[in-house]
Length: 472
Image 1 (cartoon, helix red, strand yellow):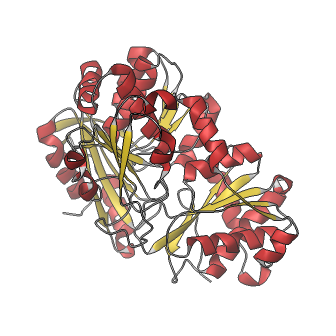
Image 2 (tube, one colour):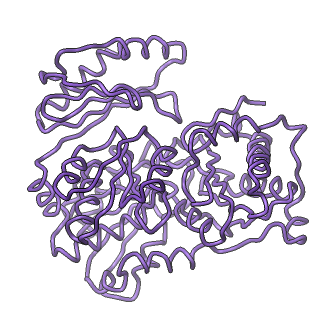
Image 3 (cartoon, rainbow, N blue to C red):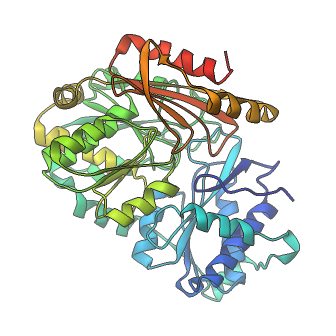
């Protein structure tokens, strides 16, 4: 048996090596034990999955274990977006969810995500409890799926109708249908396929999709993550399609990226700034903002302009979701293109974020590039990039020590004014920009990120970050 360690949202591993049917059974038994211990088992769980290799069979395996533990299961009838699964938890008043997905990981991985009663990420202290409950295979209870269905313990259901009704409560979809937009959607071979055509059919707006079939090797991209270079092939169709905007969902559709009317990628920090601008300026709403330490300082500037508090957390929705619930946040999000919204579930929703971008375009009459210019008029231009580097496990302690002991006076020629250690090490610079060096919570990857108001300093800042980590 593999030693299973929960990172961000749960556990991920390489299919057939660590990620096996027996290990999925063990994970599920651990979650079942946790629900019984917490007195939540009688509420039942939702189980869904993405389009990765064997995902539907891993989901069925999890359902068999839950049923054998006397826990009712609502099992999605098909591959279903993560936000739809999360909303189903609320709709069914369930104890939580299991989602068989590795989200944006490489094609050889699969994952076991868990969700709480709010449909959001489970906080770190409870993830540790679940992990501690994971037994060996001999302690796992299981049954046959067909038998569990006959007993009423497993119910196959369609999560879409309740979720679509919720979307219609949050945004005027009928108005977007009549706006006459031409929209290109890159589905990244994942769960977002078919959703925007379904939501926006019947009006003047047209939707064209690319990469909308199931293909778990994810051609034309290294992984289904909505950032360059993975988005490049999809964006190449934008001008041919005459697209007003490009919406790019990751493999499980909880994250989103965008291309403007010229097919240029809009980085995820700028998009988070636009989402804040949309809610505060265009919709006139007010409420706290929750952001990870790895995302844009434009939100801090918007917070001051509109007199709303901004809370910074560690990286991952396991920190964002509990904080959103605690402060009733207007919006919560992270650098990876995941945004969650008030009045919904405290979970990334790449479909709702796409609809909000369309609504912002409709309400303002502006194209995406013009919206970005309007944001910069408020907070100034900001520039971002990051470098991801795989590392050998034996070097982790060395890299950690290099970063922890670093006390640079300047980075990229800018004076360092503060070091923040909420998650990794963030070096704040004189322009309000920052360099962050931290380890991924899901892969053997070290990430070096920066945001600055100086476009010509981005690469120099990143190079200095690589040097202080000992990677150059």
